[in-house]
Image (cartoon, rainbow, N blue to C red; front, side):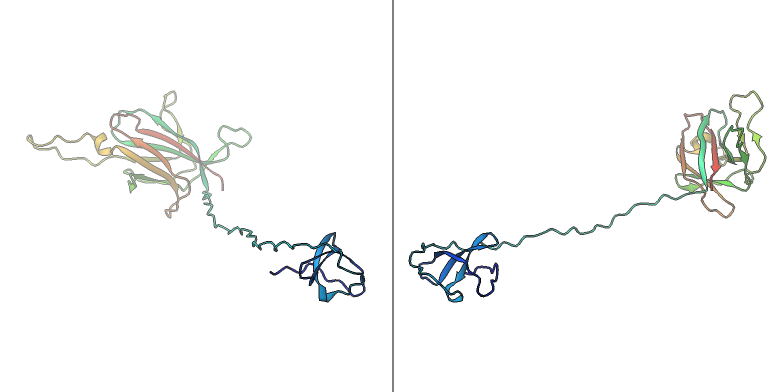
Length: 235
């Protein structure tokens, strides 16, 4: 059997023999580092008689079990980085009912703080809305002019749906020819407008996206086809 070496003593150091094995070729001595240990008889010089030393049956050495220390494996984690756009949504979307069978978006692009006398907002010019229906671009059916630095109003003073704006988007569905008497009736314009989700964001004249996407839906049974949005330029 193999035992690990626990210490090495120099020559001439007295130590007490407290036990021996039955063959007499190993002695148990005391003490090394506070514990009894075994030493081969040929490595020591015995001064006194050892016949009276107790016989000791040595215990087998402990089974060596390697200690496994788990090593944490670094795991790559992906943290999405939010895109910081120059514009942040400040108003809406607000919805207004109308008998119009087309979609109108009043947009207000500005800097500063709304209704703040210390830092009043100012309209900013040169921006557009990118408008899509179910992911398909729907260009402005009016002349698409950029935002201006002049505040306008969507209705006369005193009207319930009066909002200030400096950019207007309008989408009118294309006209359909009147069908023959024995054919399917012409869809209503609101049906041509579409039922589903719209996506809107601010863009510049080069087509660069400058804000998060705003979503809303249209339905022929829902008369809220006028929408108001406001975006403040932060950067």
